[in-house]
Length: 482
Ligand code: BG6
Image (cartoon, rainbow, N blue to C red):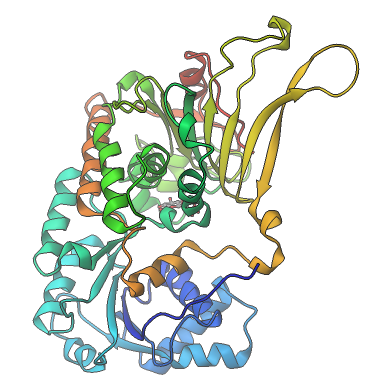
């Protein structure tokens, strides 16, 4: 099986913050990969825009270095030069007039125009104003904005209102890079492309759902941002919430942007408020080779969480009674993200109590080793009576689809190309984002008001003891992080 590459329309993509970290690590390498894959049409123009005074050659050199650091590194010299030749640069002052007429003069008629705001949200309004007043953005141009999209509901509403002054909702692409992950999209394919699961996909058959996003990295290097954010704002409000929506939403009538986003929004609005007893926060401790969280962020009294676990319910017909457990944290045992849909036990065991308790689980692994497994109960091989064991039916995508499929593309590759194609299905709509904050805010406010202090947990472990208790109290357990 060979993956298909359909070139997009000619475009001009301006990256504000074109010298920043995200541009270096993700945006430019992803564009280069799409270039190598042949998805960029002739004449596509990528323009870096930032404060730094580069000329076009200087910027190309900067990008060359970024690519050698963050890949891909297997391209020939000719291909690399061809990509770099398509790059331009304009030094702009986001709050002043410098650079804007020059940027306007670089735009090409007939090209799709996209503007990537890879800058602090405080600059969104200034950029939007100038794109409008210098007539650089047209009624069908697109803007791409990154998280953090607000700090709470109030600030998110303000940002939405600021952008709405010059751009309509169908021009705004709010990135949640989890939606661009291959397996996250596969989740929708599996749910809505197979008849098998839907009849069982409800509280009658599903005991609970657990969503884990575990990371081994700490917050070194980004403590300034992270300590004002914490795991709840950084991961749960967006990435884990999106995963929960895709698992829980009703089948949309079509796979199009508004149909999918309408269904996700309904899920968020049906989420119960989370009881303070159903949340656990943690901070990682020091290990022999790493300082603890507080040292990493340079704040000895920090009360920000680097780990959070919680239990929530969705109050609708499909899910009433099925808890959803979410957890995410830094400096854990392994980098491992998965969603486990754990089914109920059979109503009656014909094998008697000694057969033990068994549950099917559908596990969607986002990373690493993207794939899906289904735990099924079978007879333990050999003589000696009917002993039951659970074994996984394993569909690791890389194995199932063969080597020709190549590397799993980075989420940003898919998402940036979707911007050019004008497809918003994998981007968050403003109302969806606000609803997610409306659910998150009371949880965070409660921690602030009660001066809650996160529990320490071992670096390289699986999170605070209390998080295990959150499940044990319900006679359930987390899957191992590995
Ligand atoms: C980002 C968070 O959105 O997602 C980071 O800000 C986190 O804190 C990252 O490390 C995780 O993304 P991935 O793709 O590595 O799972």
